[in-house]
Image 1 (cartoon, one colour):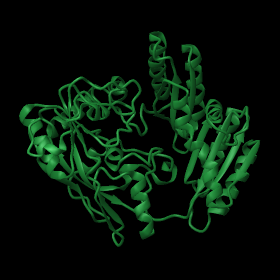
Image 2 (spheres, one colour; image 1 turned 60 degrees about the vertical axis):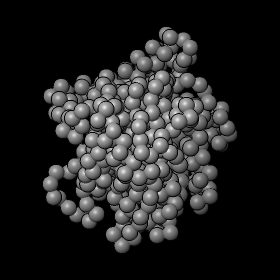
Image 3 (tube, rainbow, N blue to C red; image 1 turned 180 degrees about the horizontal axis):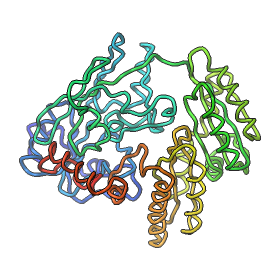
Image 4 (cartoon, rainbow, N blue to C red; image 1 turned 90 degrees about the horizontal axis):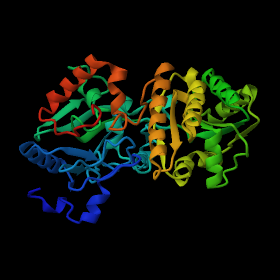
Length: 447
């Protein structure tokens, strides 16, 4: 790629290869692609002007934590990395932060503590994922049950379109209904419409440090009864995480986090309600005990709360330590969570695989995980078939094929079956309006 900014182009092939894949299972970098590490909006404009002139596909990426293949390089294409566009401007009066797409979610949270403010979206990868990636997938996370998802906090965007035109959407004010909601259109678009170079984020007053309850159950049915009991509480928990029996076993194999052997389910529950967190967790503990918990531990301070959450934080590395796996997300009505967990394990048994099914019980968003031998073609096929069956199961329960990870390439084959041909055609027409050359992350979402 010819450029007036040669220091932005990665010339070391070994370094460039590290930008070729995201965190999706089995991702393989193509042979030939160019990596540009943008430092500001001008760099992004130049790249997209070049791409339009040469009809070159562009894949925008941040920290590459995506799991659906949306940030994998394309043969002959440009990988446009925006991690270095990481400016932060906080307006405590308006309670907004104006940030670059490369700002790490957890770093933003840390900066806001000085202002007594908080940015609630809290993906499990908050320590590494970027705001740009969160916007691309409308990321959720551990605290969605109380606070919602990324879209609930994005007021406006600066976006560079294919060809280099810069547009702004939304507003900085608390209210605004001028024109169509183009901000909402770009949130969750997975890099198929343009490149976000700035975001206006809504902030909230910082809640109290969360306190935690850990409840252990000896049956899946009792675990789900615990979820139901929590849903009936007047004060909504800020977090309800479910670990099924195999997830608990995987975590304990990875390290001793205090979970008892043979547990069939664990619920981790938090409250951060200002002035009432301790009162809330005690009420949650009583409700969980009544629902059938065999053991309940309540944190009395932040340090104990963090200790109780360590097991949940260890889940992803524990699953990764077990070997090749296909892990994704589906979302169902909260009342059908038990049906989903049972379906995942029935599917795994039928396909001759081992599985876990854990996640965000408060909003019905779980992460089925199937383990397979990547050197065994039959097992690879079985894992792929298993995920297809999980999607069918989610639909049958009134759910959707993705709650927070997006579609990417992994889920693209099911898009039309969920939305219908007419709706997909309308969405393709919208993409063509913003990306008439079809160079923005082609082949993703729509296949």
